[in-house]
Length: 313
Image (tube, rainbow, N blue to C red; front, side, top):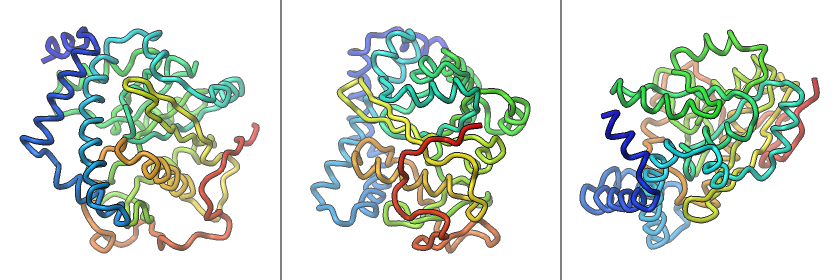
């Protein structure tokens, strides 16, 4: 398995794009892999769009997923210089200021565009170590390959089971802690409910807890497709210390709002095949972090998050 994966990383990007397009054709037209799930998610998220518009989003999202598959293998073998030319950070001065202040920072991303290029592409340019939370794969050889390839250029994938220990061990260091935070928490885990894309949606609460523990600012990494194989990344400050004590989940809420803005702007670039609504709010146990979707405490603005500078130490 590992030898096959290494072989794929040595293929030219044009060949990998062809393989990715073949994967799209088989998944979308032949196997109909998660196609009904993605179609249902898109219909619930965009009831105002026509059937034709939703069908276009559905098909293009699978095309983009095939391209991402090819780009991912190419990226596993790419040099730092090659990745830098394909992942451009629009406002590097923001992270440079945090690095100069020797502050930890929490970085939140999503399954938008090519999320696999985010860790190596930003690690090359950030100038600080990046600890990225990930869920280990069941196949040991595949997991080792993914971990090794993501570890280049200063990135350090940390299994979710070990993250708390690593976080406490490095709490005083200037580094970034990265999470792809748009997945659904397990049913029995603490979660935060809010309205997202017209539906009650559960989010992990860990980002808020980590930011408060570190007293660190939280950045959202917005990735935009410029052209085939080229992306632009813009960093947005969601919130920073001192944190408002009247709302202990403002990080998660602002992440949801920012992500929703990105998805609505470019819906085909999000990963619709994820089962983000696998259970309803009514089905979950009591005692979780809950909020009525339309209510917000007075201390937190109902407007979309605006750019703001983290408080100085």
